Length: 256
Length: 298
Image (spheres, chains in turn red, green):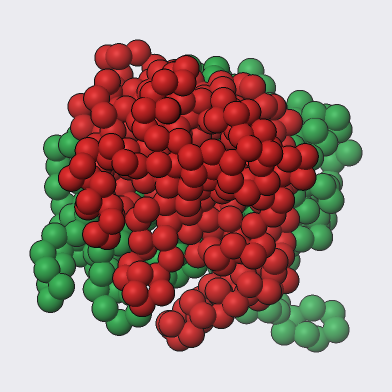
């Protein structure tokens, strides 16, 4: 784990020799420092879980608190011909594959999702940058989808693979992806949202389906979700850190 | 003062050094004096740990702030009406840094809003010399901030527990009735740079007590709690935090104000340390020994 984080840091350092300007900046590239920082993340996760447990609910708000324009961040419109075709078709043929370590792999259409019990929640979206925005989300509790797929006992994480490339895919740019552990994935407010403020989810907010994990920061809430996979660990997936931003050095645990 | 004269052994009298300079240089006072054990070991350890921790907390905090250099009041961000924002205007060839506080706008190019990063003026809230790491690197700023946040809480909790257990809080820090009654006089004396001497210097004066008391038992806990309120998971565990601070964005603003209150405290603290005897103060916070002028009483 430390090696690939270190590799990233060395690449970042090579990209800018001037990074060595300040002492703390150069310390940030030492693997033993990075190991300590990784351990702090584990400590923070354990401490927060101690108090929040698996069921403490994120605060929900009143209709009057909803932002007139929900701020969209990250990808605003996936730049692929495939996505454009789905959008032109009103996402009628969009399917979400649920696979990996499950007894019963699924392929859910939007109609399948709509047919399942739904949850509507007015919640606050907290970006890692520091801002907050309130919106009303409607979607299918992920716990129901997982229960239908019947995770195998060794499954520990739920991966979300998305339709938005983070750069030029022909140049090897990765597609956005994210992961939650089963505790957060089966939380009552963790939903596959298909509506925002009572209307179909707009493209800039992740149409047709995005993840909402209300006790986490915004980057965990993958948009344009196309494939869900249960895994035992994510060491071999992309950068091995469990998410697009995690591969770039952000904490996997995003409860803070 | 009597006229200087050679002593019995024939040594020439020392040249006169003004008393303020003697104090600044740490020279023993000319008159009678004695050493007094002023700061106990836990105070000294907590003090220097805290100095390092606060330094990293402030600079990594400014790195995090730079990811969205604006403050709001309430439960969410009203992007059109920030309380404060540090933005950049213009194009790549010429950027102007704008600091906006409520309706007031200031050109702060070079320091706030737009400043030099590795030889190029870029849009950034606080300048490179004020952030850890220097260049824009939110992920690493967060890692530093959260590591030192644990250290801040551990150090602060141990110190407060010790202060309550040992009587330091009650005997040395809690302002007395007398301190409060004489506060105005104390402020006037401080403004004229007259600091307590002799026996009176063995204790913290009223302003010191009130300041230290508020910083340790007010500002410290407040900056921790407002920091925790920004965590979405802890908001689920303790929604009371949101009620206390009026929402996550208010908490973030209070957190920012607390950080700059710490900075203000630090600046005044350093000025006072220098004016009231740099080396005597510094030595007493390293070894505990503090020179008191005058005869020892009791």
